[in-house]
Length: 248
Ligand SMILES: *Cc1c(COP(=O)(O)O)cnc(C)c1O
Image (cartoon, rainbow, N blue to C red; front, side, top):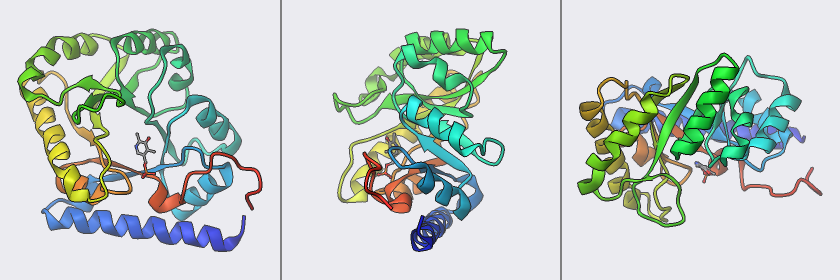
């Protein structure tokens, strides 16, 4: 790849880190309390390598086959952590067990049960976040959580998930509607944070530590509202590339 492109990715990566740090300080948080997941879905391995060379240590992927292929090609498993952030069909659960340090997008009991069984067979524990739909959009995955009045009805299901011994619930993930103005995301991030506090009070046996929220358009607002993991793609690696043909 052209050095120029590598330099651009490094510059953007450092810029995003700087913006995360500034957003954290602006609300009295330590910059280290927020980790950056660089989202590389649909990007070729050269771009992923450039992100790693720039300093990225957590890479987020959406599609299991694509991710596993990149992981095998790059052979950098020890220096970086791979996170699965996309919706997983339960028949693809097997692809998540071996290579991923954290699944952000656990969104059904069926998937959870299958992952639990496969993790058990592999002699592993898989760390997961539970995905909730706080925006109410029908197109979005995640357990329904847009209406606070119904939060109590989520408790038995989450308690069931906790009983799956080879899964380790670390917190929650949300993907609210995308707005041109990041301030419009704020109420959804606030709601996610409040939902996490609700679970911490109602299911204290789980340590609710991780809150995954915020993308290129609104990660600073997410940090101000308590994100511990932000998932940033385009602002670092550029527009998504659905085909590699003809690319430098
Ligand atoms: C693609 C994606 C992101 C990153 O979005 P950008 O706009 O590229 O920053 C974050 N989270 C999820 C779940 C995604 O699918």
